Length: 143
Image (cartoon, rainbow, N blue to C red; front, side, top):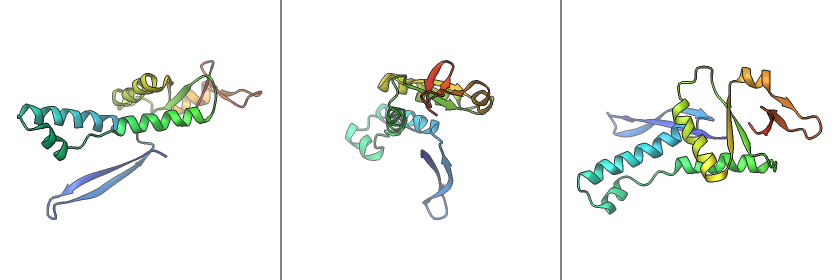
């Protein structure tokens, strides 16, 4: 299960407190990786030494870890057609950050993604009776 915990600074105590736990929330892992890179860029423009930047802001590899985990799930099925169905909400608001996952799945692992709502999965997907594979759009797919 992919999870994401959200934290906020509790100003009176200067501590980080967990404010939310999301299951199968993966798109912000990409954004956090990208934002970390932006922060390192900004700190570098302030002529801060690279080792000081690394000390202050460790490299965030959550995008790679999420993508590697999703690809491992696809590979575990052992099917030659490496396609993953990304189940999304109708009128999804996070489509652009989710596309980082799609891009990285393809670039790092050769895994195709098909975006479908639950309704579209219900209407378009079928189970191949001979193999037991989920078929979406003519391709064997994994959820």
